[in-house]
Length: 432
Ligand SMILES: C[S@@+](CC[C@H](N)C(=O)[O-])C[C@H]1O[C@@H](n2cnc3c(N)ncnc32)[C@H](O)[C@@H]1O
Image (cartoon, rainbow, N blue to C red; front, top):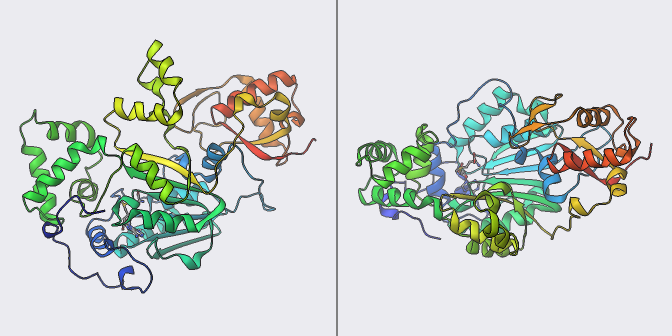
């Protein structure tokens, strides 16, 4: 895939920087030298460093939570009471995701790779200051391309957010990650979507025509352009309303408007891309965006809901041109989860569960859920969750010492699972 911007206007060095993975003998991508040098100039994301753990949570980076979402159930913990996930952060940037991956997955082994030494220096500093290494069994941060990890074995969870669309051949990147995924592994991707980037692409092209380059001068001219176009101009308005806050940091502005190599997708090309990696789609990680109920009602919604899922998503894509990215999970094999509504009360109560760590305000009846949405629990829900926490690991819901009839227990468990406050264990659990 070629760049949105003509190479002659990008101002990047003709040869790779020292110690870049492009020096290595392993497989590389034509864009690697250009992209690595760009991120050395503008380490992304430009989030401030801070001492101590990162704020709050993001359930997509809590593997228990992501796993339960995609597979409908969790594997048991190991002898030390933890789940030692093998985690890869592929294209970790300045380590924001790596930091969360460490803090949200205690006891795991984490490898974070990127091709930009300058960016990795920030990731090292961020994770050092946050105490990330102390939360996991192992944290390695390495200057390597995601195309060249054949000696690393398999991973249970791979996070690659905002990376593959910056490769000259994103399909090679996807296939490389697919080879690193364990048979029951989960891959989380974030890729640009055409529709919501219409104004961004025009701004990028305009800056390329103005020979702004991809360095400090591009930054200065880009900010000048978006600040001086007529106030009613669509590109300026879109920037001010949608992106001004996100691009306050220079690195973020450069990533959006000056990038020397990027591509984007529509739904059809996205699914062709997924197929090129031999992987299976296991759900959007922002499913609410793809729910037609967000946009339609009454008869129109009924018609929409009668469509196959892919057509429902195509409908949403057409109705909401502001969607600027796709974020989703992939697995090596198709997932066959039993829908919660179809699980019998007996099956539900025979399984164990764990409270999702990605909720805010525990323990209480007014909390924030995994998507930071307000959650109002009843006293009985809280009792059930507390009993679960006090019981030995893997205790079946039916065996919790609670003065609660089975029907009520199942009703409450079902709702807590639906709201992703309770994560089900996939295995058969202790009866008592
Ligand atoms: C937009 S940034 C995303 C950073 C991080 N994933 C995030 O979302 O916060 C893209 C990152 O991918 C890295 N990258 C690009 N190609 C890569 C490759 N082949 N292997 C590893 N990292 C790569 C870049 O150096 C850059 O740091």
